Every structure is written in structure tokens, then in C-alpha cells.
Image 1 (spheres, one colour):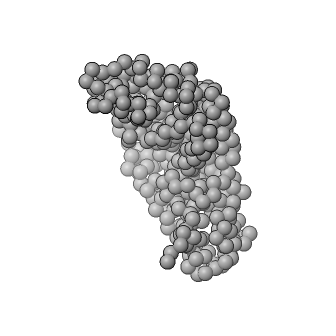
Image 2: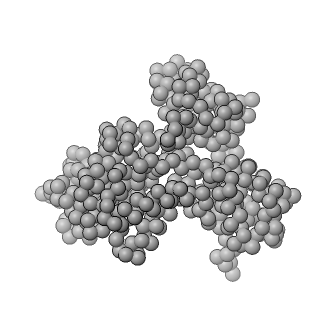
Length: 380
């Protein structure tokens, strides 16, 4: 019979939590501080915005935060958590369902149906409608009794009008009661939020989710393997850490491949002589990942500019916005593309995570350095 321990603890995919969450102590510390304030009845000064390229672990950190809230709630019944994605929020009524206790809504509106609305704050149900202030007052009342943490993943894909309403509602509730809205998304999230006409978002608590350092990368691989009785020698580990580029998704690919190798060959210690099969498996998955990203840039006509940008990042880890705009302007191959501004093309590269701008700096860096090398190699 197959036992739980027979399953690979590494599960590279979309938002799956790793067997060991390494290297996020700083981000966890900031979030714990906010939760402590909310638990004490104090509202945070602003929303929290988490952003970074795909595969960095934003959803994983949201998973951790949700667990952290629920653990605290189980202990003192103080904080509630509600989590949603934009595909579940297609109307103001669905917003209120997300925010307000469903028990209260069902009692208040036993035969609810959505009616025509204008803006998020006017979301309502029932044949006779209801006052938006009544809904807002109820949410504030609930948050005073039991603070609410709202987690919104993939926030960059949200409808702009609904996002504006949610942000304004968040501000209104925070002024009266403990309430936290956490928005997570790709590097394009910051630009998206700047377009929804909620200027106070500029003062959000911004957390950039970047690659791990070398030690955290090693821990993320070694600790789960050791728990299953698998060791890895130092030279092999150094090789794996370097090849992963400290990118969380690649770290999980390597961990999964090493675990499979050890179990298939009944190995208790892995050395560089024995990981060729794992290296091939990781390489194949990674090449497919790279080619999908490259094809996307090609399909939208920006591959020449991507190649030029990739060449720049072979000699430097960071560069300026103005220099990137020069590179893009000099490498637009089609007159139709030139009808869009260079700023728009820059935002396209950011949305596709080819480049990104971490918080607290005006410099840009590669989303995934090895992707840029791949783009260059394919061009050559």
C-alpha cells in the first residue's frame, strides 16, 4: 500500500506551497506585525500590495498568511480571513458576498437578487433595493467585532471599476474598524493600480517578492530531502543552487527531480555523478517554460526588443527605465507597433515579467536571468 511518505514532497506548479518555505522571513515579519496591529483593534494605515514575477511565491505567501490568520483566529477568535480571485468578483453583489457575513446576508435578503448598480458602493440586492450605507455600516460593525483580512490574488486581472470600488471601500472601512486588504499580482499590478483612480494606493504597504538568496535556496532543497532520509553532498548542492538561479519555481523543479531520483534508485546520498537524470528532467521542463515566454513576446511583435534587452542584462544586473525605453524605441520592427508609446511597450514587458522594478529602487532587473540567456541563444 502506498503511504503518504511515498509521495514527492516537492510539487512545482501554480501556487502550490513548498514543503519548506525558506527565505521569506522579512516578508513574514512585516505581515505578522500588521496582523498584530489588527488583532489589537488597530487598523493598518494602508492596503498591502505584494508583487513579483510568476513563480516567485506570491500565492505561497498568501497561503502562509491565510494559515497564519486562521491559526490566530482559532486561538482567540479575533480575526477572520476571506480569500478570492478576480474571476469570482464579476459584480458589486459578489463583492459584498465576499466581504459581509453570508449568514447576515441570507437573513436580511432571503430572496436576494442582484439589481442594477452603479459603482461598487451601490451594490445591492432585493426587489426594493437597499441603502449602500446599510451594507457599509454592517461591514464596519462586523469588523469592529471581528477584524477582517481580505486576500485578493491575481489582482492585476481585476476589473478596473470594481477594483476602484474595493479600494475606496477599504479606505472607508479602515477609517472606522480593523480591516486589511491584501492585493497580490505580477509586476504589472503597480501600473494597473495607478490607472484605477485611487490616488491613496500610492501610499500602500508594498512588498516585492524576489528571488531567494543562496542559503535560503539550499535550505528549501536540503531540509525536505533530509526529512525523507536523503542527503546531498556539498558540491552537488552548490551546483543545484547555482543552476536554480534562486528562482523558487526552479528550486521546486530541482527538489522534485532529486527526490524522484533518490527514490527510483534507492539512494540515500546524492552526488554530482548521479544527478544527470535529474538535470535532464529539470532542463526539459525549463526549456518548455522558456519557449512559451519567448513565443508570447514573438507573437506580439516584441521579440527584437526582447533580444536587445536580454543583451543588455548579460553585462549588468540592473539598468534604468530611460535606458530600457531607448532600447525598445530602437528595436520596434513594425510601424503598427510604433503607434503605441514606448511607455506602453515597457509596460508590456513588465506585464509579461521579462523585466520588473522591485520596490524601493528606480532600477529594473531581469524577471528571470536565464530566460534572457535563452532568448539570446535562440536568436543566435
